[in-house]
Length: 234
Length: 338
Image 1 (cartoon, each protein chain N blue to C red):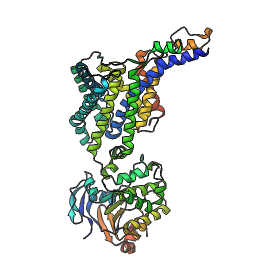
Image 2: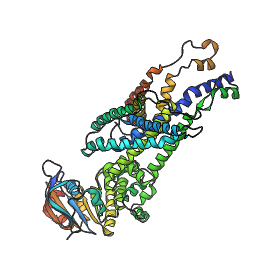
Image 3: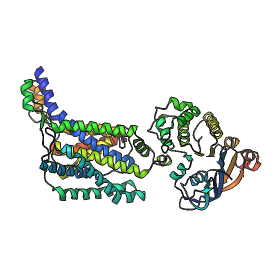
Image 4: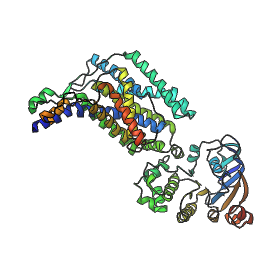
């Protein structure tokens, strides 16, 4: 059984359901990737796991317990961290303050965690006194991921972490995400760059109109001729 | 000629610089409250002026009671001792208004305009309560030494023909304003709760994802804004005099200050407060006497050389607002666009 599972999720933002029987899961020390065409409900699935979308049907379980009724804040306390696609840094606060905000709920010494984030993203150490609004897109993503890691999560959820960054920065970010997996964290992400993301994924979910079309290991999905033809451009 | 320049400078200091520094400090403290509420609760709070009046009223009642008991501070006004009463009353009023009115709309995620209009209602209620309790008339509550520097003594000591007077209330205003602002900035920059407030103002959703408790942030914001309002109102009352309706009129210059500085930016509110105060006083001051000192005899003006009658001083705030909104809608310190 996986650490985090969204099981048969149906729901949306009020009107018609966007999710129509979507199941995703991820285990500690794994990377799971949700891919699919625009409007497939990838981000919505992510938000549903985090309690930001009301579920009409289905369940979300963390370590075997249902968390479907909990607020996003309560899920943060249970070790889930979420990096939204946009607005994911405090632009008027310094890099260091952004990281401190990630550790807001912690009462223990956070300096070791901060050092680990700086080891992972050395450029942030250099720029720690700069406000996050002054950073480049790739650096902001690093701040955003760093902020999420400061909560010491078991589950790290990333909504399109490589949106709007150059291919070089994307490779760099994926390398860092692999390092996060090494630390035993469950990583779940939504990605537009499906081919590259599936290449590092332990699990992949191809979503179409709110349902799972294909599910399997990253390699299996990359090898699947139908997935290649429909979603990976050949 | 040289002595004329000195006399002209003293004249300006006496009638423009010193009063504007005191008035600017009062506006800055008020504008800080407006900008904090806008930054965190995301609406323009029109009840802020009457919140000031309410806090000041409580400070006045406290002062009268202390005076009746014969307790005073010697040279300093007794109101300083009663200030905690004013602060407590203003905080209580703000929290009561939030609990009974603003929270209702906040929970429903109403549009900012709805909250602003609701604040107009709160403004009328507070205004009415103040008038019922303390009356609509002028209330004097200042005591202690009126002047720190007396014009006549200044003249006899310096031998100048122009006098400089500095009132105790003016120095007190500046000192308290500096202390309050320093404490506020230390709080916002250094403490956990202050950082939570800044984070919430910057990006509400992300602050929630970081575990910031919105109710606590809202409570703190009201407490700080109301405290600053009570301090500013009491200082204004000591400096001028207390009449409930004058605080309603302060609303416009305070909003102008907050917007000019960049709404949501504490530094901007302070800069804006002084800009509005200096503009208002400099534009309504008659320069006739000043020009008599600095201009040669044949160029001396006949009229008062007053750019604007004091009756129109409120229009200065309007003019500044219009200019800023046209040319730099985010204000001097790049705040939010209203």
